[in-house]
Length: 74
Image 1 (tube, rainbow, N blue to C red):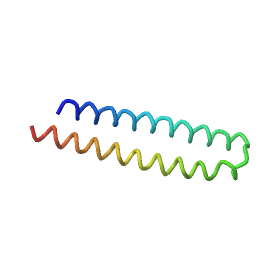
Image 2: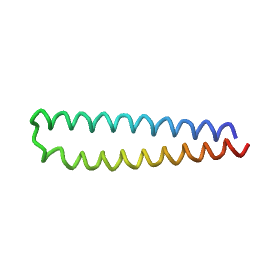
Image 3: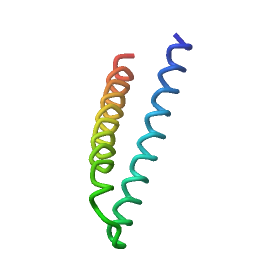
């Protein structure tokens, strides 16, 4: 059980790191556009990153809810 918990925690930490990185990249792209960079080459990548951000936030929210429910069952 401890091994499973460690693996779960490691995966959750990884998803949090990827989410942080994704948010940072999106922010950099917004800044680049605000500074006059052409939108066309950035647009597709921004959509991909935004979809990734939404999915990661959903996943981490589900993990948090499941963890909260489990802690109440003890």
